[in-house]
Image (cartoon, rainbow, N blue to C red; front, side):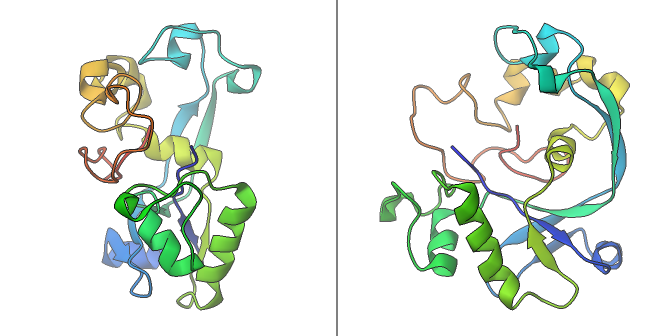
Length: 196
């Protein structure tokens, strides 16, 4: 399943963040959280780091070597784009979605459909703002617990019992085959929901 989140780019994003840590687009209700700039260690050193919530596996070649990555501050979607938001912007539901699923994330969306979605919301975007998909580094940084990287192995995000409180994965979906409603678990320390 592809869950969509969007970053905002533009010269004014740092100034916006100085005024508020949250922003909601009045045109469509998409809500964003400012993610402070920072650095983290991206990638895996050994098998156990590649799957902290499941059985250890060998990291893929593109997950190694672990390396230091720094990101500028950026706006990140507080939640995945919901199916009702997708319909309001695109004029139709994403594949396999029914009206009862409106508060679930837009799933089964191709990269091209995501680009079409972005084109539509960028047509009349507020001045200085451009919606885009976050980079891989921005996504991984947003998933980090917001603590010093040296504390990662000892913090609560490495323990399955705590992970269940803020992210959906096979350890807490109890056989469900569809995505859960957005925002039903606690946000991560950055204020973002359903990030893993």
